[in-house]
Figure 1 (cartoon, rainbow, N blue to C red):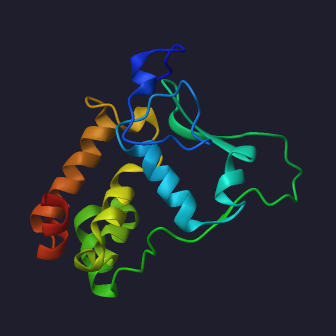
Figure 2 (cartoon, rainbow, N blue to C red; figure 1 turned 30 degrees about the vertical axis):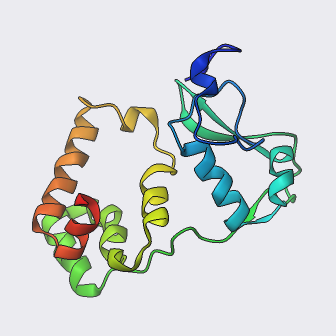
Length: 171
């Protein structure tokens, strides 16, 4: 959503908003600050204090949370270099086979959740993994056949999955 200048929604924040988060964009509480923590810890280039010169994180009704270039770039320019927030190991061959039997063509999209040892992931990273990544607005609207189908798939995975996966997402 985009707020008009002076709109209280644009002012609502848990802390200082990073310069690279667009003025007028309304972020969920804590999200802009989460992007700021990500930039200070994970971004290698450009320096966090210069990130706003390269990109801008925006929130719009059409695209939800997304990134836009803050200036023109040539095809060979380095825009951003960052360390991984969470490295996703491959699921074991046994787990991949189980997912393929149960979920067919959706198995590759579910495998990362099974490959991570969630008991060893700290709460900040878990929350970032669940909240900071882009989801197209059409994929986040309840009532969509695709969204409902994805939700049923995840419920089935959590219900029949291994206890660490269930525990990680039910706490």
